[in-house]
Amino acid sequence: MSSRGLPACKRRPRATKADGTPRARPVDWEGNEQAVVIRWLLGEMKRGEPVGQLYDVTYHVPNGGVRSYKTAAAMKRQGAKSGVSDLVVMDARGGWHGLYMEFKASPPHTAALADSQHDWLEKAEERGYCAVLAVGLEEAKAVLREYAALQPTFHHQTARVHLKSGTEWRKG
Image (tube, rainbow, N blue to C red; front, side):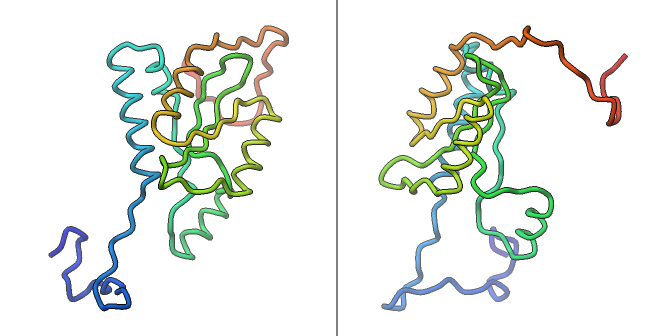
């Protein structure tokens, strides 16, 4: 058995180049670098650095990637949207409700910003979220450090209205 869980005779053969040699497996440069950003954020939290406070409120939106038609259709029915930013920081700072970060791999592996991604960043900013494109690990770290350094946003102007609909989740 291979590490992919199927015996070699059951796996589809790798595509070949014109000279007959197997093509190299594609590398998810962006995904690998984004994982490093999250690992770095966890390390910063463990070291007690201010930016580490964002670790617990930062999450990835798994919208991209290659999926089967059936899975892609199910995700769309469940609310997946084209262009949604890769990382969301659920922490209100600097007058913003939170941060939407579209992450791209470092050069030379940087992909172009898709129109749908540009539109999502624009929508987020129009609705009161800090919206940022970060190209590469170092730029993403700089964005997160800068955002963490902003003062927390407090909404004292109006009282919060709790909805009557929905199931109560608060304890006590």
